[in-house]
Image (cartoon, rainbow, N blue to C red):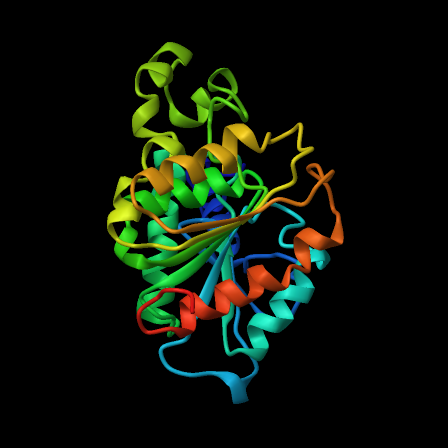
Length: 272
């Protein structure tokens, strides 16, 4: 007869072993270029440093979002190669469909601490927001303007009302639709720009005028209008006839690359 206490012991050992295996299992992600993949607070993060001969200490870096499965992708390679050639790293972390929520922002802060304290990255980075990455990066940036050298965007979402809408975003905020609506000014990027303008954070967006997913007028257009009213500096490039697409001009934009290199390389963190 098998003793009951022995069965309990064996089950316990197996459970602990399974937990330990999961705990030490390395983070997994396919990157468009060689880099480091690691976990931060249970979330998959990455850092793609420039070639060794291009590295300086502390290391300039670009913060990319959204880091969802498959992103960043091959379409970003062109600009990433140019960042590497300028000695600039690229980093990011997958916070899921956070829509810029406080939970997602907290994980962003953990990544920032890991990169700046343990992986040699500079205290300021240039944020690079693609599409809904705008909600994620802008909401973090508005709360940490001193950590932001500049913000670049490729048709970025800047307005929760426009995308994905309060009804869809509220669960990520752990709020009801009515509660998030009442608190919208505390969570909507276009309503939170004052700290960035005060900190003289420069912004560059490229956003097509035929975008029906993330409409120009409600997002980059409205953000640009409000930012200029606050005294902020923003450059908005508007390709005619382009929508929310994989058009190469969005991802091979020399003006965007020049902007990013200028703000992370310039000690004053302003474009030349």
